[in-house]
Image (cartoon, rainbow, N blue to C red):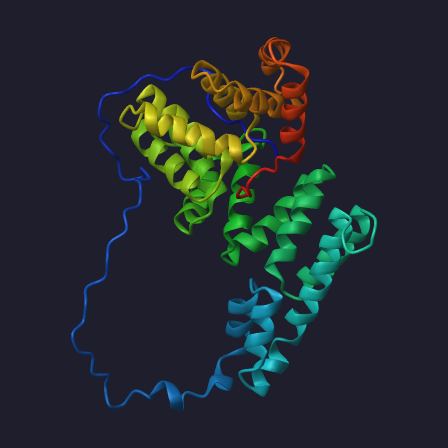
Length: 334
């Protein structure tokens, strides 16, 4: 699902806006109070006397539905009841892994979306939330949006942040958009720490889409998503610092986040960072970043790259090509 990155219009600072009861303020964390002594009631059982096998099956499966295979295997060793109860989820994870192989062409198999979807659906039927989200993604790619939303909804209602985020984006891209429900799901996923949801919530706050506009809160969520490793949020955080919109103006922090975005594969950031390096006289690295931006399809970088390469010797041009070829983007949140 494609997302816009930065509102096309240049926003300007707004006067302080009073928050109404439905405004989603930036969540601040607080430390719990320290307890010097804790004396449990004598009637409560100690952890060593708890009967773990007595946990209801539905509760156990609901908790473990988002587990990875190593976590499921570890939980299955707790007791025989857990081992038996988690058997469908262990089977689901095997099918989920096969679905990933067919989706991406890994593990010696060729990409095959039909087989990938088949495995994801089998895994989802056994309770895997991860498989529900991937089944929704494939249905979305196939243009079957109603089926995608169905699986996103199931994952979202089970508390999965990725499912909540994808469901929210589906609502935003609907015609007409369902912004009210989208904001609710984005907020749930964002407060759970999902970087992509935090970025999307920031965009909604930035534009005033479905909620009261607040540049300050938008910038805070951009920054939180950037800290979570989301490249687009890194780029927007850089712009916030550069323009002084929502965050205090700081050229140093703007440069820091622009480079981070570039190193995480953001093509526009690579272009702008390349120009910044060129202005500082760092010709070699400027040429590398402009080359990377060009390879990523950033057409605005082409004239600057070509003009710069013409000034370099054949040896240095070969060096730029080699460095660009060896370059790998840092992992980015999805």
